[in-house]
Image (tube, rainbow, N blue to C red):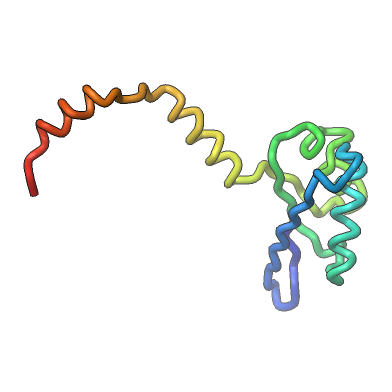
Length: 116
């Protein structure tokens, strides 16, 4: 979540919720927990200007996802897919096409390298 502070300073809050401790991980329950956590540290949700999370449907669903529920209550808190998560997904996809090198092929590659 990103909040506007005094003098246009931005405060970025990273909320990590241990879903193992939550019995209900649907969007509404997660939104309530996030809003509770934010309230407990004294931040004003009226100053929240952005939120980012992964693409899981319970987080990013258009009607019942956590981000949508928070946006209904706080329209300035616009949602975007987390850039770190997008990068991770892109790297995983690009690496999935790389073929593993067997030990014998690696020895052939090593033999071609010049000593430093």
